[in-house]
Amino acid sequence: MKKKLQFLYPAIFVKDEDGSYQVIFPDLNIYTTGKNMSEAYVYAKDLLSVFFAYATKYETDCNMPTKLETLLPKCKENETVMYIDAVVELDK
Image (tube, rainbow, N blue to C red; front, side):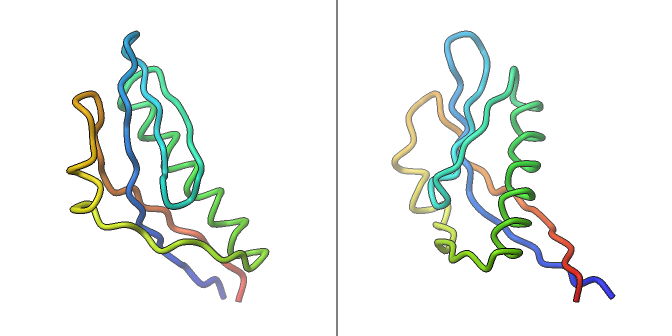
């Protein structure tokens, strides 16, 4: 039987001058990029899923997610913060 774990972490989407996006997970020190917001979002979800698949497999300690209310006041004009979720299936 498989066990499912869900993770929810804030990501900062930084719009570059060329219209592409960098996505940073400040609590996990990981990032990805995308040509546009939609692509960056998909890549961010994928990155978070892969990160936690390995983190759970190797029992790695991770920082707790920061609340959006803490990150929002620190954002610049070209930055957007949103939660990204990932579901990881484990063999029980």
